[in-house]
Length: 474
Ligand code: NDP
Image 1: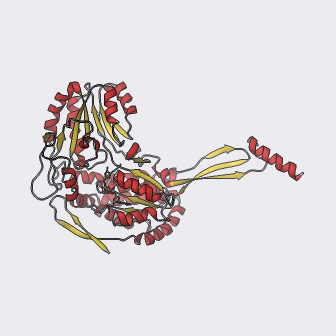
Image 2: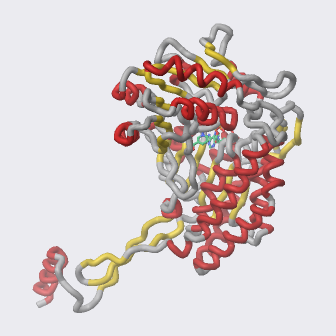
């Protein structure tokens, strides 16, 4: 058995040493999951809904405990962590209604009756990143369970504690043994085995684009279905006619939430040339005002980065000669502290403009007109989210339709609502999570045709075949 030390990002201390499962554990987990899934799928839809509602209620009873655990393990500010735990309960409640609303269609065809069934896939693997451990796990397991599947969750190695606790709460709330299992282990070992295991019918992976591409390749030999939620380099486009005060006041939230460790971070601010100077004057105090500090403090808005290796990666984008326009403040001393940083690179192809930094670092670039803004927004391999600030409704719609990204907001930085679909264009991923259709992504469509004697015969091909058969027998 291998182990890993989990650290508190706020002071670098070792929180605990966790046992990690090896790849063989997946065999046993899949077998238990399959047994549980068969019984689960046979339950009446209303019973599955009740079980998910009980799970949601149990999570709600543990919001404070889960939030405190996330503060310690991930360094999330306590207010944000509470929101995340509550969001898990909301996601479960939303999908608790799904089993009774998941039905097929009856399709008019010649010679009989045709209908479709939404059949559960079986065992689903959910592989999550370290940045939003609880919420992203729930986006996979809640709709998958609702659709009649069992789920195996592999949390990220740095931040597994809240996901492990959610697995325990599920059992305490009465979810059948083996139906939802949390398997802590290394991505390259246990994660890879989950993807290649023939008993796993679908994998939902959230993480970096590079690892997502590896997961997709590993899933190919068994033709395993994948949903991929990957990286981003989203644009925050500010037009001259925007409410500049609001755009500047909220821009830090758009990029520095969760210390910028957010796939939806608006990490490229694009400002129309004519208002650039004014926007920067407004942005500076907004960045200075971000309260960075102890994540357990109720007033804190931004905590530390998740780990020392990640801090080093982020710091590599801000060398001593970096074009820093201004920075906010951050505590000194132990802990992975990084001050909110605004860069004004001279080139549109600078690596800080092109690569996902995944930290509290934002670049600001100028654009000339609407066409230039759209071209600049789309000049990225990614396509996850983005914001458009303008008072012109027609422009808002034109630009929103032209930007190649899965989740756009106008005069807002909102990205995630459990009732609406979430996912990326281009190298930000494949497939969508959340929204009303998410359970369907965890089903296979089965079509059943039932022949009806002396039923309507209007399909020319069937008529011709049957006539030929009659002639032959005559
Ligand atoms: P990684 O891609 O490094 O890891 C994601 C998960 O995959 C982890 O659980 C990891 O395990 C596991 N993993 C690693 N290698 C393999 C493998 N070969 N096979 C199967 N699983 C594997 O991402 P991070 O955890 O570093 O997360 C940050 C990235 O996630 C960012 O790029 C961010 O943009 C993206 N992200 C995307 C979101 C979206 O919805 N589009 C949402 C949140 C994050 P282990 O931890 O043990 O290495």
